Image 1 (cartoon, rainbow, N blue to C red):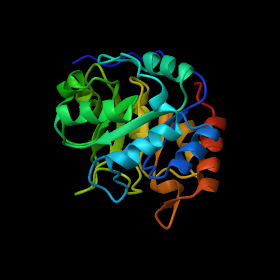
Image 2: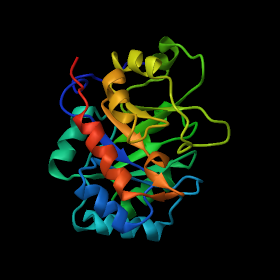
Image 3: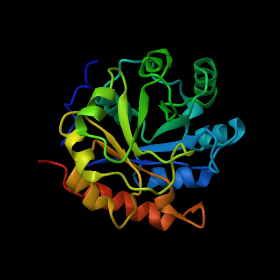
Image 4: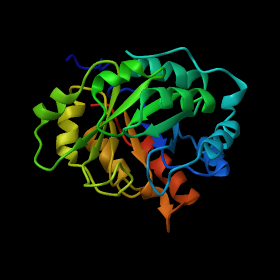
Length: 243
């Protein structure tokens, strides 16, 4: 399978996704602080939201006031950046091993801009989703760059997250940055796993991802901490991304 295009790699500040948002006020605050993506989790998780909660977050971000852009796979990073230029932040719905009809229905009802597939879905499923897709790849210890690159298919943007038994994400476990950097030199990636306001600048400098994704790293006692959200966004966007 071919790799996604790489035109956005190393250009401009790193994009930031604040994931696991459960409260409308936190979504609005993240947007005001400069987040590029706000993620709501529909997969089994302590951060899982109901359809009603997600719709309230969508309303808080003004998503129900306008229809979503008619984009579907194959979608590139350049396509997503064009969406961002029109409507920032983009609302991301996180799913894991759910059927595509359910995903598309929820995406329509919540006016999701992007769907993230975080389970064991085959890459071909990205083409059945009626939204741009972030496809999560669970990277195991000791995996080589070639193995990760071979798992990346066309039509979706890969999100690299460390493999943790029994968890879909948000564990705070850190990915191997050297491996992620080697992959990022050949394909645009979203970097996740163990990022915090204290280490994200170094992660961006070393890995040079297209975007970074954080959930537990901006929480205090399991709740989004807006001071940490602000610090994370500022640190990520101030870090150098150009080679």
